[in-house]
Amino acid sequence: MKKIIVQKFGGTSVADTEKIKNVAKVVIREKEKGNDVVVVVSAMGHTTDHLVKMAKTLTPNPSSREMDMLLSTGECVSIALLTMAIQALGYDAISFNAMQVGIMTENIHSKARIVDIRTEKLRKNLEEGKIIVVAGFQGVTADGEITTLGRGGSDTSAVALAAALNAERCDIYTDVEGVYTTDPRIVPNASKLDEVSYEEMLELTHAGANVLHPRSVETAKQFGVLMRVRSSFKLEDMGTLIVGVDKMELYRPVAGVAADLSQARIVVCDVPDKPGVAASLFTALANENISVDMIIQSYARKVSNTNDIAFTVDASDLAKTMTVLDKLKNEIGASDVKVDDEIAKVSIVGAGMIDRPGIASTMFETLARLGVNIKMISTSEIKISCLVEKADAQKSLKGLHTVFNLESDIMADVKGDLPDV
Ligand code: ADP
Ligand code: ASP
Ligand code: MG
Image (cartoon, rainbow, N blue to C red; front, side):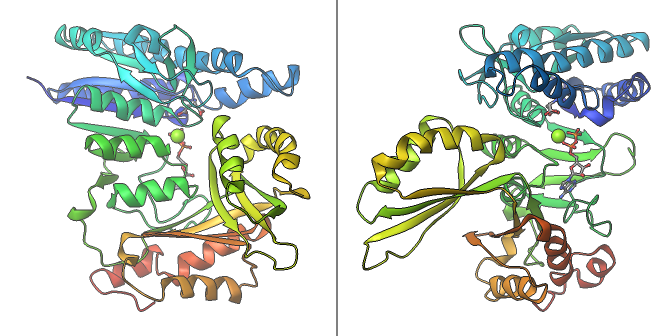
């Protein structure tokens, strides 16, 4: 049986018909190696952003069902055009939207999870020698409703297809040469990583490195899909492989840094210090599908026997969160709810920080030297995040990138020799 390679091309890679012709050549190159090829594409250029803007001119709160109907159209345009471009070069190709394939999702609009992918149609067409082009980002529920997977979700469509088809590899083609120590558009001397572990990549994406959709990494880890991030325009560059942590040399404590500017902080003030308050609060949010990121509950004040609960949510969930809190505020006895959306989360990530003391203090000292005030801190085994003022995000990111020796020229010197942090 032939090997199956899944290739995914993002918006920039298919921004115009010239670029689509380039993608067609990249697809054919893989087919010519003797592999079966399944291609996943995003909407052209900034199509999705334009569609969102159009909807917002009609109503500030468009229904999420209609938003999915609207946004899913972007990918339908690219699959048809790319398939035509491949056919024009003399190859047999066919496009499918999510409903035609059977990319089944939960019944949640705007951030649905894939629950199953039907593979019969795909296998049949591959056996007939066709190149298959599938619409990313979209899914369908058991009731035939169109859903989308969340912004950037085409990466997840590709990895899920690779898992379902037991593909050899899932190549994510984008506009940078791979995964870097931080966003190379913000820190130009960021260095490209040849390898990064699923665990680190997952933390980096949750920390704001939007080069991959977080769920694509989660799915790849769960199903052991070998993933590679590489450039659509510089094919000689092998990009970044995402591998199991056991396969990596952990010579560096920090693999990358990231900033997330799309969060908002909420403080629920003076709630009674008694069992059940946090449960009521976070259950109510979970019931509305609102994901909470950092959470801090302050030490109880002795006289009033109350404390404050602060947490962060994605800014796009802020309006929904406030609706929930308006209803809940009196029930849980809070005196006030405060919102701060001028914040950013800056994080350092690295599997090499496990059992290595001093990494957190280096991070805090660096921010202190830069005059950056830390509003909240959260940690995992391989990540430390600090919430700071949005205006401080860029200098924090640059400072941390330098202090942990992640710059491209320095990186070459320290390979194999642990930087002293
Ligand atoms: P696509 O349209 O191909 O899905 P995206 O815009 O979603 O592309 O992702 C690629 C972008 O991710 C890059 O242009 C880069 O600015 C950004 N990015 C953020 N963090 C990183 C990182 N650590 N490594 C590489 N790129 C990053
Ligand atoms: N077109 C969608 C978006 O812009 C999905 C994707 O690009 O992955 O978010
Ligand atoms: Mg993307």
